[in-house]
Structure formats: structure tokens, C-alpha cells
Length: 209
Image 1 (cartoon, rainbow, N blue to C red):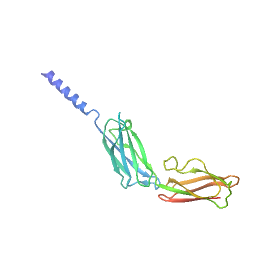
Image 2: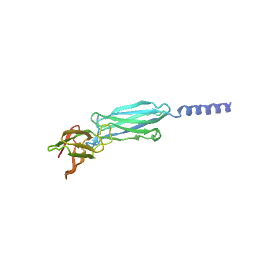
Image 3: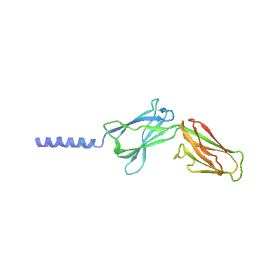
Image 4: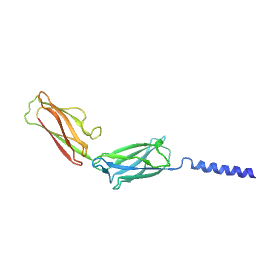
């Protein structure tokens, strides 16, 4: 009888731990920062999506809207997930996303993931040639400013010929410098022009030759 009781006790312990295998919750938190104004970003939508192992399907795990302190906190169940993606969105700010791999998360401590974004701004490159000839040739290229985003302007050299009275609009990080390097072929008219773009607005950069 004693042997049977020991066996049943052992079996109960095995079942208990077997049922709890893989259980637990993760805590993920952080601060969303507005780098244009060097302060926490309030009113940002933060969403966490998980991609399940094997089926490659994303599913919403948790969502929140940041308060005045820019903070978000998620607590979610530990599941068979390969990785998570954290999305940060707010109107007139650049969207951000951050991959968080399952293997990087810890159960017994808070996982910190801070994200920085910037306000959108625009530069109007206002080009005017008031003494044009057919063979006038202007070229310019962005020297400093936002690049590599879906809304960003062409990153190579721009060539313009003859009479010009036009504007080119380019997106930029708010409160950041946008500058171009230009040259008028056959003349000594070369240089660098730049402006600091105002968040949520358009700043004019005049290029007259």
C-alpha cells in the first residue's frame, strides 16, 4: 500500500509540473520618445503583434495608447511564438516598428523596449532661374536630411535645364537640418544651402541662379 501511495504522489507531481510546462506571462514596457521636441510622446498608438511558429501568421497580442509620460505596458501569455513586432503610430509622426524575438524575452523580469520617433516636416526647395538660357544646367543633391523612408525624396543627383520656376517638396524630421549641395555648370555658382524644418509645417529653401 505504501508503494502505491508513493507512486500516486509521484504521478500527481509529474502531472502538475507537466500541465504547467510552458506556462507564464511576459511583461513588456517602454517609453515612446518624440525626438523632435525631446520629450515623451503622448497619444501614440502602440500595438504588439505575434507571429506564430509554423504558420507565419501575425495576430494582435496587445495594444495601448501612451499617456503624458509616453509609457506603455503589456502583459501577455507565453505562447509558441517565433517573434513579436511592436508598432508605434501617431498622426503627423513617422511610423516605427521594432522586432522583439521570443528568445530575447525573460519571464522573471520586465522586458524594456523604448522607441524613438520624430514629427513630420517638409522643405520646399524653391528653384528659380531668372536669366535662363537653353544650355543652363543645374544639379543638386541632398547633403543632409531624412532619407530611406517611403515618403522621402529621391536620394540621387537631380538635374534641371533651361528656365526654371518650380518647387520640389521633401519630407524631413521636424526641428532638423535639411541641406542641399548644388552647382551651376560652367559658372562659379556652387555651394550648400540649408534650413531647419519646422515640425508639422513646410519651410522654404530658396535656390535662385
